[in-house]
Amino acid sequence: MTWVDESRLDDVEALERLDGRGALRSLASAGAQVRRSLVAAEEAGVDRVGGGERPRSVLVAALGGSAVVGDVLDLLAEPGSPVPLLCRHDTPLPGWVGPLDLVVAVSQSGRAAGPLALATEAARRGASLLTVGAADSPLADVTARARGVHVDTVLPTPSSRTALWSLLTPVLLAADRLGLADCPPAVLEGVADVLDAVAEECRPSSESFVNPAKVLAVGLDGTMPTVLADGPLAGVAAVRAVQMLSRTARVPATLGVLPYAASQVVATLDGPFGSGLRDAPDAPRGERDIFADPYLDGPSVPRLGVVALRDPDVGPEGVALADAVLESAREAGAVVLEQEARGGHAVERLASLVALTDFAATYLALGLGLDPTPSRHVTDLRDRTSS
Image (tube, rainbow, N blue to C red):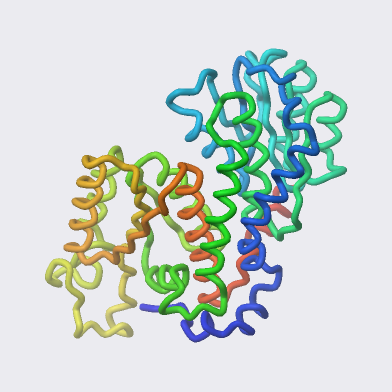
């Protein structure tokens, strides 16, 4: 069972027509987003965050396509963070937040209700504020009134999903200046280089048999994908990948982070998407019934797809466990696709995985004939829930 039109993926003009809001172009600007955001953060006075003093605690307010900002900061700060760090999507602001704490609110539009409400309440309590979002937005106004630091997003993008590095870079730079994470400008410049390299490999004119993102998109065609991470760093990339597959490609996806999710993932191999139950109750385990009539017997069930995100910094035990899970998946007839992060600093490794899966989800949407940015059902939901 296939739905992806591979010929469309190799037709640059067709991709441009379907990608009406330029999602691919925005993803390709990720390296530029990092470089421009570094300049914007310095100009905004990122050294003034928290008065230059290490806060008692940090709360990150972000949701939707911006929520991964909190996940990345948590990954880099733990386990040696000198202060507690909490991620929050909506009110209420915890009662302990006060003048000694730092609230980081992120919203591309500067209007997202949750981060805006949290920043407003934090300002009322006298907490330090660092916000990232659109210039002249309600979020920027709240920060100005509270004498915090607001960093404007630097490049126009069609959604917060394609603005990730504009939103993330100022937060990482501030965390470095406050001693919460090791992420100086030199590291972020290296991240920009990694993002540029992935964008070059995944450019629309690169044919589907050599373009790693197109290869991944075609491999996922007709599957029920599970994104498997072999450790905490790949786990953050997996959260982002699942979000992109669901929101951009409109494909339901699940995730598992090893070692804790090993049993959870392999248990699904016994079910209808990973074993002989896929096609017929009496079919041999792991094989398809070649005599099944799709009109009389119904359509075949999608196969389980396992996208393994691998971090080269994971120790031998992590490697052995991930290899064992993937071996079980292959034996059960699942589609297994592996992607290993590039070497380097943790943020560089993370960036290589995130950039590749971002492109893959976007190409999957385009191969399915979908514009990757707007969603009719998301628009309908907003209309039905707006007051």
